[in-house]
Amino acid sequence: MKICEIALKLKIPKSTVHEIVHDTLGYRKVSARWVPKMLTEDHKLQRFEISQRLLQRCQQDNGDEDATHIGVGPGGVFQANNNLFDNLITGDETWVHLNTPETKRDSMTWKHPSSPVTKKFKVQSTLDRRKEAIRRKRPGLLRRGVVLQHDNATPHSANLTQQWLQRYGWEILPHPAHSPDLAPSDFHLFGPLKRHLGGMAFETEDDLISELRNWFDNLDVDFFRVGINSLLSRCQKCIDLHGDYVEK
Image (cartoon, rainbow, N blue to C red; front, side, top):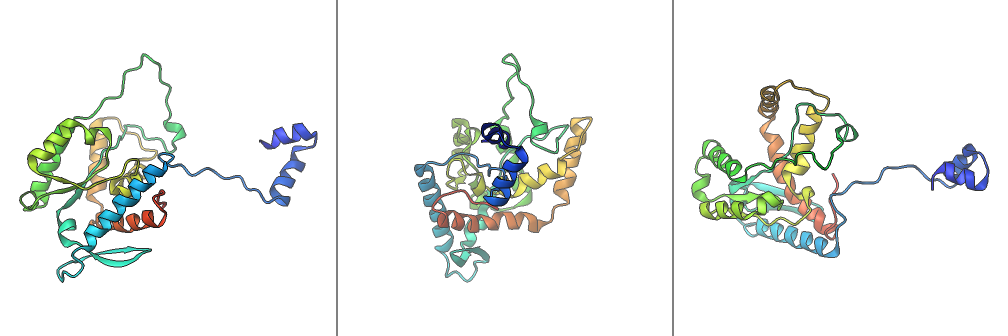
């Protein structure tokens, strides 16, 4: 119930109701924590099991002296499978606009049933570009074998995508449904990107692309390393939370 509703019901001033609720009873007005989905017990179990499998895979070469990646979480500190991280890539897609509002409320738009539908990106061309980028930036990875970490959004799980990945022999790292908190692009990259673009307006698409390239070029290598390495600690936290969402 709202303060005004209580005041009207009891026929007392709103200031009196506010004083009782706030000062006497100790209530505070807070915002709810937004989560991608209300997880069922099955969802939580899937998140728990996949996180556990990933940590077990990372720990299987714990005795390898050449392992250089360290996972840190509430469950302890461990060396990660060097081969997994050497071969791992991650990627995702997000929308950027010529005019980026500073708040989510500002980004809401009216839509009529006759409005054109949102365009979908072409998955195959996206993967082809990613493959070419790997060839340029990480020589030898395509030959050793790519381990791809991405979420199970419809474009990623589509038959066309699966056929492409099978053709080139890319391994897919298991990812639980409704879990952006376990996807590095979501929990580490897109937030800073959207905050950087917040309040900006561009006249042309070329101007927007130029700003995006400048932003990525100015990111330190450690920024990406932190995002990838924090995947392990987030999996550990997910296990500790019995499959529930991991906060920052």
